[in-house]
Image (cartoon, rainbow, N blue to C red; front, side, top):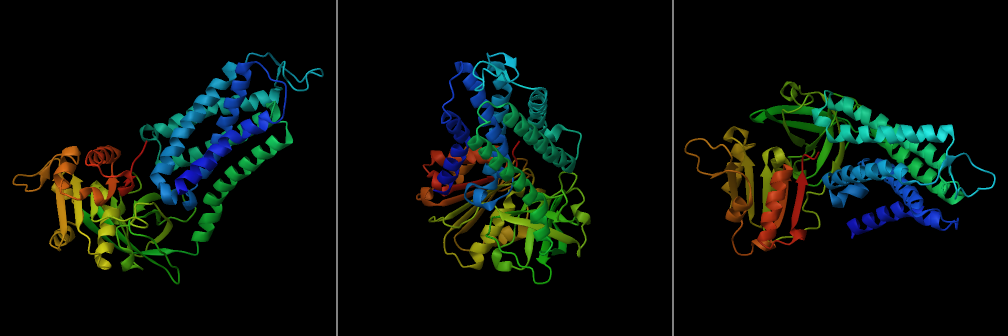
Length: 439
């Protein structure tokens, strides 16, 4: 129901400018001119709502999942790009200034120099903006540099597109549609201001301190933080935060990390962090006493509001972090349901919390199944990838379709597991996944 409401609101915002334009009762222009204007208005609506989708508002992402929200943000941006690029080529009417005998602009396209210039700036900037977002991993820039470029580019395109729409739009001269555009623009820029200014100011009152940093697997570390002073923090097992370590709350140097500890262990909060990009390569050198800031909690990879006869936890690599947190919480509260943890890695040295997982496997009604794509000699676990065959091997028992399945890992693994579970007739409502990477 939450998702249905959000989708309905989103679609209503997209079609609102078309409805407001139709209600003006202006004389119709040639068909393709009307299509061109419609595409431009929908593209502009999409671009402004993108600010809200990327604003980390839990009212949006708490039931959909942050990964789904961001993936939707990326895909609709590409839709807006197509609409925006197409619309100027569909016009058939000639371009001219506003003519005294044509106040409704049904015989011309009224474009003065300013309106034309702002439209061209937005039209030229948008393709580059989308492309550097899609291929950001191939760019010779640090992630933080790309983020700053992304923020500034988004504001430039929004402001230029707004000027073009309000100054040149035939229908946007109407007060009601003008009001709609101003409202969306305020909402967009307000979302950005809240995320970059207001929220960091609020986080100044909730500082955390790093208490320990220990190695838990090859190039993988566990970082523990605790709130400083009277600050408090609550979360559900399986959620994640954007974490800043040794940086101020306004810094762009932050990364999303799942919480690996259980809520039962509060006030301690733990994260599993793998050495990867520039910001995590020196994680092992982090010192206790370092100040940390947490933006969250986010994510819907949780047990809240969900039921199942048993609990299946399926992880790939550091995707184990939120799932070990869930397993820890289940044990802490004495949940009697059986648990199966299916955990895939490339080599045995990458297995996180090896000793704890062995202890977990020894508990009643609990099974831990390791899968290695490059197993060592004498390996007794499963070999290969977590795929359809692996899932069938682990969950082919009677009643498996009544279990709750929680998945976290690379997109390819998640896709394979979801397909396999569908083949085992597991209902979609019993499968909850979180992809920790998306293009």
